[in-house]
Image (cartoon, rainbow over all chains, first blue to last red; front, side, top):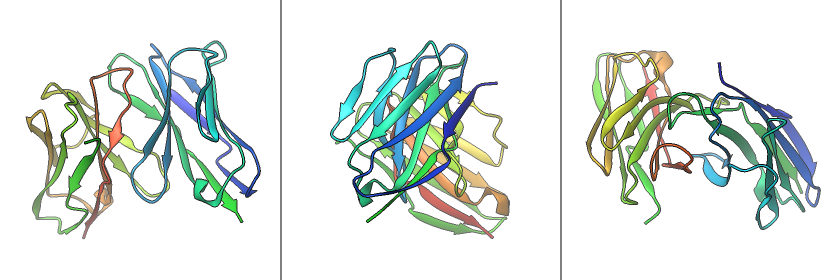
Length: 112
Length: 113
């Protein structure tokens, strides 16, 4: 059975701190790994990773994939209170195209 | 237009009611998805449509019935639901199946009494 594990489950930091969120996976026929940010409503897309070792960056956020060790990290530098959210990692793979397995998410709280 | 819209935003229904959730996108995406999300849990995939044909049904009970009338619309028909079906129902779309970013709608928050 496909499995995605995120750690830590929750994290409390202060503004300006740097955080690293982890996502490890066991998925057959891996196709891609996606990071989403979910505040009170629907998940919003952050990154899609398909190749090992290539860092994707968007402002203060960056992410990288290691397909050999089967994990990804999401880094957020100089955190702000607006970064408070649940960060979801999803991996697409398996025999059915279109099926994403989600991790349980990391709840990040950034205090002023 | 990079938006997925869902109606209604909130729905309260009794266990004998019949209702429908609607999802619409005008991005030309050919894959559309229904997810169910309970509080403090990740989204769980229910159904996937590709080119208006049902591609994945994750063993969802028959009281949930999806329908894809055209490439822009996705419905979820609800009948004889149980209180444990109360959840946030999310629709998403992607360009196609596989290796594609999914764009989520705002969801319909459903309460079954």
